Length: 113
Image (tube, rainbow, N blue to C red; front, top):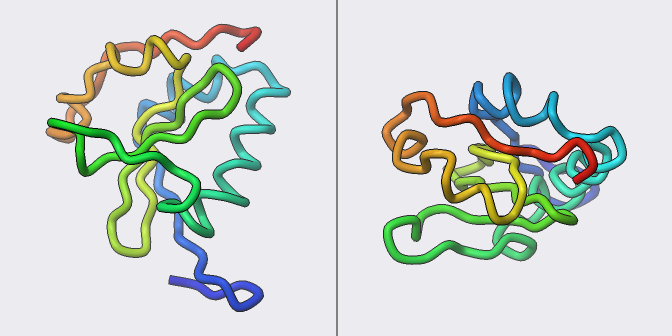
């Protein structure tokens, strides 16, 4: 855990499919907003700015950025980014596969999201 300006800063780790599939499909403006949300919100206070998921996904969190959702897990001083997709599509990308550490289905992200 790092300190920045008196605040704890979490490190961020991206699931390989987020870098390979999700981020390249996101429109530039939305990508900037997502990056800013991760750097200014999730890296500083993920429990404050994220919303916990429920039931079988209760150890996971989400953060809405426009029409997209960032799904992540807090692991000590690390934030694991597991998916960045359209709000209604995130739940169909294979969260079970993510939980098991395997590859997941393609995540639909609109170019104009």
